[in-house]
Length: 62
Image (cartoon, rainbow, N blue to C red):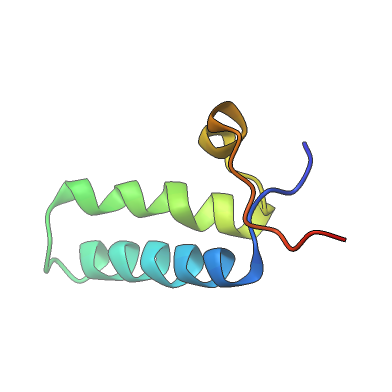
């Protein structure tokens, strides 16, 4: 797994995922908020399987 998620993309994914999970735990949104696990994990791992399929890479070029 080669990193394909850049710094800004990573930050947005982590914040959005954590926010969805927090809202779900507080009962503000329904069960669908658990989908926040996906962006949270992909942000923490610096790898998005969908990006690799589509050929997208938001990391800076060396």
